[in-house]
Image 1 (cartoon, rainbow, N blue to C red):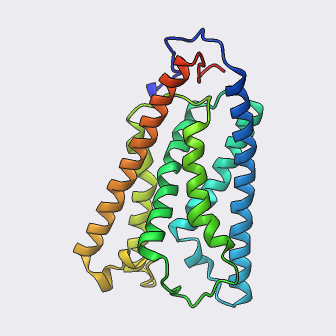
Image 2: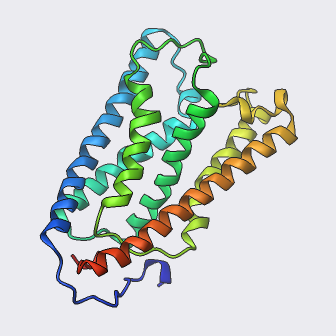
Length: 241
């Protein structure tokens, strides 16, 4: 078995868990379920709004990185909520997945609010409520990042997770470029539009965002590894609560 998925043996594996840690895990587990439900509602409202305006195109809508990662967040947070409520620890594979979506969520929030906020939708969509946008681009990224800081019971991850986290975004970029260049000529975001912006400009944007994702994943792994030490110093074994 790969070391990435092997149980982590804490040097203080006999440490007695504190009631506070168990309470935190249950509380964040419930919060995960609520967050998953909120994102699902936001996506539903957004789709319904577009259908009523007669501009819903599923082949375009589900190509957006925000929408794809939001759907991933719904599933991951739902699973994490059930683990938090029903289990004392998360499986290592889930910790790997959860660290990855920290990076994706923060990228969605930062890229949208820095590069895209305030610009009209390219398909003419006019939002009838700010709720979906706020959930997808503000509150979900904040929740996902904060929850990673405080949720006990997760594994200490290897730095090799950095490359695992980069697989999906790079695959998404590649497929988006292939679709735009060899398909219908549509790109989900202006910074991927090779036709209008040129290859050098798109390459700079992609390289910058990729570096940002790797940096965020490294930060998530670092926080998790630091938490393992802090929890152990408090007498809490995060791996064997």
